[in-house]
Image 1 (cartoon, protein in one colour):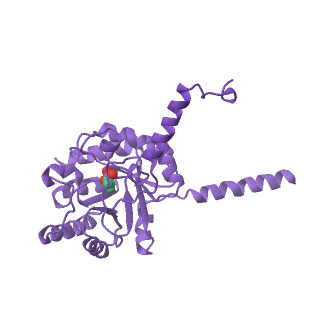
Image 2 (tube, rainbow, N blue to C red):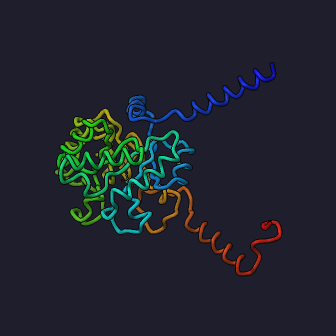
Image 3 (tube, helix red, strand yellow):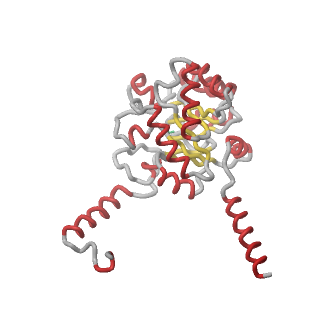
Length: 285
Ligand code: KIV
């Protein structure tokens, strides 16, 4: 009898655990928009961080090509390669039990022709186990988006400030403030929806325009520097936990100041080693 009770309680614990890990899918996101529930998204580029982000209940993890800046110290996102993105995405996938994992197709892997775009997306999906890809742009990459989606791979769009085009823009300032660019952006958002994208990221555009776009499409619109009228928010993890300290745009809310905390902790360790305080008698065998 006691054995049966134990078995039953173990089964209950297991089914609760499974429930907690109900996976987020592209459909869950569309449903969340339909019922007005905001979507949370953060970047992650490695196993340890992805595990923390997933455990904290974030809905979408973006393996962003911002890894080029954050992980590799490049000035732009342009240098990161498909192999690098697959490496980061594979590590993230190994950690994640619940979140939807979206991976950026890096610069130069989808713009030249749609067949190359599909090959790049297939490599990401096959070699990392990711759930979807993200691409920057609208009308100009329509054929690539269609081909990837036709192969059964979910695509997230990205409009507004698109860092892969930084040398065309010249600066990282707010986009679509002028009427012509705002009209183009609205058309591109409609086109991404019609092409079958499951969501759109809007980066650094006026809040009123972002809300107008979010209200005009049925797919979720996730903003970064695009105000609160959209369907969800994304930030770069290392910025929101204050691990980076040189990037201070108005839209960034820092929830921790890890840069200073880590300097202090590492400085203390350094002192303890030099003064022979570490390790003490309890910290050895
Ligand atoms: O690469 C990235 O981190 C991104 C986010 C800023 C949306 O594309």
